Amino acid sequence: MILWGRSMGAATALKYGKSKIIVADSCFQSFKSVCKQIAKKNSPNYVPNCLISCVFPCVFAKLRSDIQ
Image (cartoon, rainbow, N blue to C red):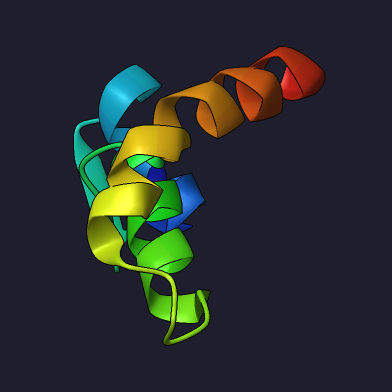
């Protein structure tokens, strides 16, 4: 069996896949790092990155609990 995954699917295939062949396209290290990167990229210019870094753990915890 061959598993192919893109983005979150690639991360899932690498983490939980039980196949001899796994094709991981555009994988990321962790969901948390992707969320933080997107938050920094899409925040308004007047919001400093240090503020995002301070607030992010609370926002991510809420997001994670909502997903679960």
